Length: 164
Image (cartoon, rainbow, N blue to C red; front, side, top):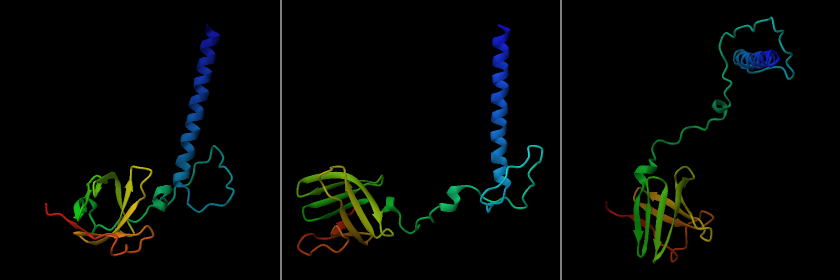
């Protein structure tokens, strides 16, 4: 029984010592300057790292963060119901949509593209193609072809926002 206890105690000490070394390594990385030589040599265990005058950010997310979206376009506020003839499109604030085109109903998700100048409808059905609309104003969507060009005039009419 004492051999088992001794083995467990030794194993726990080794595990704790291993954990402490790993914790010391990130602390040294936080205080080290960002620009380092290609192959840094490890510091001796007895030497303490010199504190940096100004801590350098090491978070990869900070270095690749995208700029904030333009605050002038509110997707939730833009959501609503648009229609023209027998076509009715409901853009929901949660990013879902329902399109009723002459009795053919499809649903899916909608997103804005091209700097919030286009709306793309991505249907849940795998047989349906995406649809693209230009935001012609806060109350109008103009149909676009798949390549982003205005649709032929006879093919589709602009969708106007319905009054609430």
